[in-house]
Image 1 (cartoon, rainbow, N blue to C red):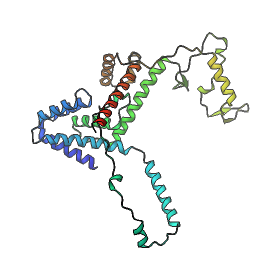
Image 2 (image 1 turned 30 degrees about the vertical axis):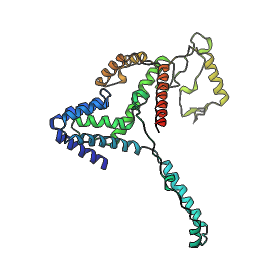
Image 3 (image 1 turned 90 degrees about the vertical axis):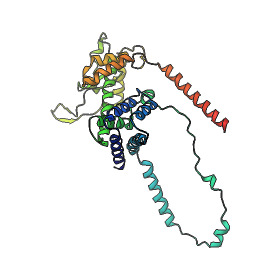
Image 4 (image 1 turned 60 degrees about the vertical axis):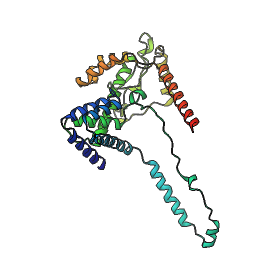
Length: 332
């Protein structure tokens, strides 16, 4: 709660100093979060809106946002290490309590004392050079919870809300993952074969379609498409349905593979396939205000680097960091 109080107080102080210019400040903050302007440009625009005596409120506000987002991201880290550490400490204490301590004299302890240099046990400070900020679009990863919380805070302040709860941020994260899962599954099911369980649930993405021109294709029975809990015997009794044995299942899989066609290997999903999927399944993004910018962004970025170009860029970044470390070691 202290982090939220510090953030709200810092925002109120900044809003009191800006007044009507708070909307322009939030707009610049939103553009910085969207990577449309750099951090230097955002600071320059903020200094234009603030005076020399109130510039520190801008820095305090940014620090409060970062600390708030960082506190939520660190709270989601599993605490298995701490629990295991406590258990090991308790076991050590029990073992020590069982052992009998020998009486030691003060003279023997004084004779065994050896002075040590405290510098050898001091923590070594690691120097961090000028590294570029890694964005989610460059890492090809889903935005983390701290990034989502920052965007939600800006949207809440624009609509007049005071704060965003942690449960709302977690709910938005789950909604983002579910939305991406639906779009990816639609794109994969459009380009590859799949199976349906109960004629509703898609599974086994990438399964090849059986060749309908073969004679025994219609006789192949796939028992994995139905999930019946019970089966009816000859005496009209319900008994628990059992899975087929391993040899029967492997024989069915081999028969399905022999009846399927194997096309050439396909590469990763491209933006052209994503655009076609979004245009075909318009219900994948229900909101028109989200669907239209997504289509525009996909059309604008139809060209994207290939895997080889991304790998070469990664190798170049590694070479640059190695040169920087070599120069730093030479200066020392």
